[in-house]
Length: 148
Ligand code: SF4
Image (cartoon, rainbow, N blue to C red; front, side, top):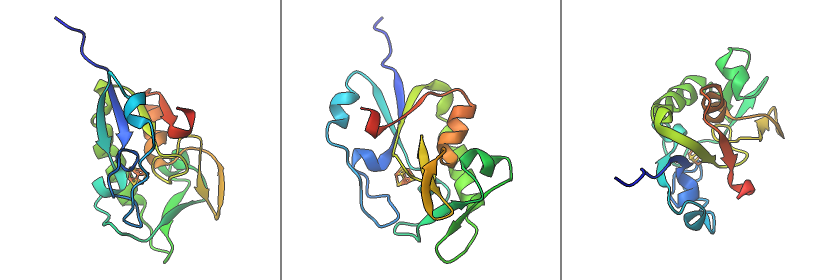
């Protein structure tokens, strides 16, 4: 029996899904080649958390995605509405795929999917987004498209 292709969780916007806050995608040239031989599983934690597209963009306040899970930071949209629950719910839903995932390929800079940096208190700074932090805590290796 042939070995099963490794499963990779992928930010859906990198694969061309128009799920970003502004209704656009961020298809990454060459992503299909980079995922050759893998089973790509598209996920969008913000949509999975019930947020619409388009939606008001969000940023983290007070800390990174790990701090959100620890209750030391929040996610708010530009109108000041707390979206932390939706971000956590969407991350949990998408992470249900995580036990079978070999790794994850996530959109850089996103308050959900950012691996190495995200927007906190008005600046792009080091630290994971809410979804990336949950995957890291569960032992799923995460890379951003910038590392391809
Ligand atoms: S939550 Fe992730 S997958 Fe969804 S639009 Fe934002 S960066 Fe892309």
